[in-house]
Image (tube, rainbow, N blue to C red; front, top):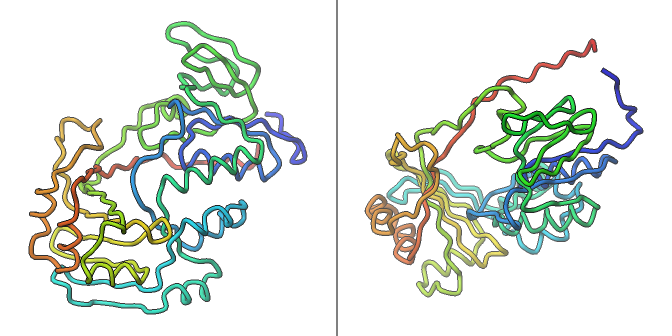
Length: 314
């Protein structure tokens, strides 16, 4: 196989315009290559709630030129607390923001997924990445031939993709980044690798700070923190996002989805069910849950991917 000079620009095709796909596009572009992203949905469509970006993540965001965009949207916790389900303190770190910054050189950021995707998309476009929406990839090739149904469609020599609308795009490298429910992973690996349930699911909740009137909750929100409660068969995590204007709560429990319908990974949850599951837990947590009027539940999935073997002799 001919090798491309490290000084030659590659044309890279990224399948998937979510967090992973956009981050991949930015990193490859900053390495000096040309990137096109192909996303099946009609527009940027990140769902979910908060996430915590550890210092190794925020270090990358800084390297990619995202600090100015993300810093105003992040919450930086200055307290880390771990409690038992009844509220007893098991561990606590004050000045956690200073400790993390001193130890690792970059902060821990709590971000909303929508904010992160928006910043990644804006930066990718700023760098010249071509982002194509309504572009579902139906086949991937490494040799210039893509199977379209029962027919064989010829692309340009080398790697390429075929879209649902019949358009073809060739390049030097195809990166599959369309998530755990990837429709193209099997095309690259040559076999189906279906997501498998971990046995756990998460209830995800966000609460607008402006709606909080309880003095205890207001005091809790006035100090950015990450708080964890650990109980039998479940645990809960709460932290602020969007510069402390939203409270994000994740409740982890045993999976109760229909085991025969493994394709289902998200559903509307029952507020009453959540409140019942965490009845008798720490008062501050139950106060939070009493404010909830809507909850989504997500089945946690994972893929057992094969190991990558690289032959360095070729």
